[in-house]
Image (cartoon, rainbow, N blue to C red; front, top):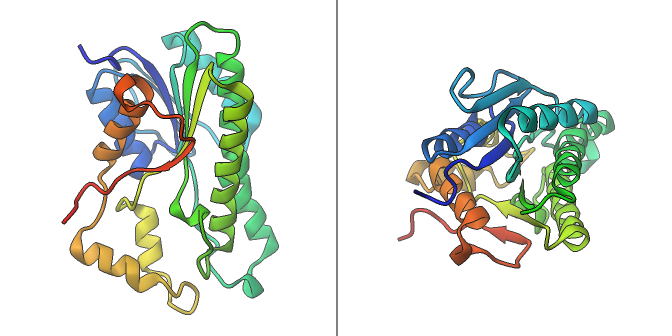
Amino acid sequence: MAVEHGKVAVVTGASRGLGAGIAERFAARGVRLGLCARGEPALSGADGVVTGRVDVTDAAAVTAFAERVADQLGPIHLWVNNAGVLEPVAPVRDLDPAEVGAHLRVNVLGVLHGTQAFVRHVRGRPGGGVLVNITSGAAQRGRAGWAAYCAGKAAVDRITEVVAAEEGPALRAHAVAPGVVDTHMQELIRATPAERFPDVDRFVELKRHGRFNTPAFVADRLLELAFDPAHRTDEVVLRLPDEHVG
């Protein structure tokens, strides 16, 4: 039996796209799941799955969901902060500060809330846990039009590094860039006018050639990182390899 079978994992933003794909793959590999999103999460009603409509910008709601998952399924071994948004996409000169604030409440505070809930859950518990915060290559350098997204993901990387320094080795924390996955967010990117996002042609070409990582591939790599000693690493911020090479 695989080492991840029977483990408990929480995935935020699990109603569609990467989050739903990760959830489905985890379930197929025997992981019991706590799944939350603003909309209806994937796998609602399935055995071994606890779901909830949770806004990750609400710290109390995230904490309450973590407690409900632990009450129903037992100790949480893996927490994946996946919930995130892309917009607003525009030059800095045109950004609406209120929209940027709303973006950062999801992409930064939402990750912080999930991280805090999991850290508090793991502290003092034998066996510890693994935290995965989904990040992006956009954290590493600025892209025109992506001020909010780049800033938010850079913050996710730094928060994760701080948690690793504060909580290790009881909690292993990783900020994982999954590569390009063909989700609703990618559709939004490809539909963005070049005057707002000059790099749009790069993403159109990725779609044309099908150069994407699948959610199942990402999920398998996360399970290896979390539970397979052969794939453990001390690296905190990392990018998954490309699924299709050549």
